[in-house]
Image (cartoon, rainbow over all chains, first blue to last red; front, side, top):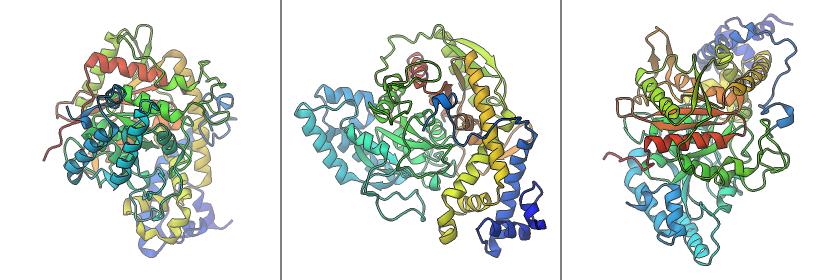
Length: 76
Length: 479
């Protein structure tokens, strides 16, 4: 795994250049004038999402959509 | 009183009694649109000619004895994320498809089957990704935001430029503009109403629902939307049973709900949050909402202090779901025509490409934990009552909110904060206008309930309307 690939998967702040490489890897090439605002926004989003790492999920599986009352009462 | 001033229930009763024709009602609402639209900017596309034709058809059917029900001949607006055959779905964006859809969305088809008259498409914050709807002005104060993203729908209903409207809600987009314009907004249980033909913002958080001037009207629209037969296996199908053990037949959700003869809420347990919902809330809004909750107590409801589970993780969970899903929904056009998006939406969509899959999965697992915790909460109480919004409509140029505790947040973050829990958990949530907070601007009382228990929310909402003497007329629109 390359360094920038590891960076794309961590909570570390991205520089605009790192953000460009991560975006490219995600399939979204960004023009130079987009790097600063997109990376700043991405870093802000990451700062909000980081709190989820505190949670102890144990064996809880992901809930791809909300299912009222669990699978027995599953909505579409 | 002019026909455009009538509530849906009032207009339906007048039509049923032969005192008002759908043609007169539609002409009156179109006239109102003509008088106020320049100042409000509620509509993207008006379909006046087809509305008149629909009204004529409704009038003939009713005259021939083929009355379809309370929505027959009632004019409505449709948020421009929701397909209607023959009208372009612009999403209030330059990216929106210029080609009109050939077919109605599922909800538009159900309203059409009920005989409702489509007036046109109402403005949304671009693709529903924002809480202000900058094209539209607040019905009560044109210098203030409409709220969003269903801003056009809320303003049209508030101003009498639609008798009812549909909106969508991914993080408050029905309830926020409803609260800021003083109308009723209902976000039903996730999955109750079909999203086929509705432009997605976030698949796992999106809902469609009504904006009306009264709770009774919301019940009438919801019933038409649920339909007599829900999709196979869905909660709207009469053979299914809701998780609470209650019948989940369509009758449980709306019009078959008998109007309460009194505002008696004896035996109902209402949870009042100790935290989250009353933190960083404008004192005037808190006063109004607590007074409204006090009225519910005076109607016989028992008030219980409750703690909101996992409040610390609400914003992260909401963002962790919504941001990557929105980017995925826009993946193709974000590559091909990024310059056509508004800057505020474009940067969010682009940044969403940098959210790792691990964060998305953590948000999904957090949602699972929240679902369990809220299920336990609703074993203690029947309804949770709280503000819909932390502050009334801000002025259009305001970008951030400063709170007395020294924190600051964007206007959009503030408006999402109290609504997002019902999107994450999927529970139904009803926003009711409450007394002005001292500025002359309305706020919202938010009632949340068990999954598929819309009937209880509507009953409590009607009790509040009865107790508070709310009449549901349109607001005067200043020149």
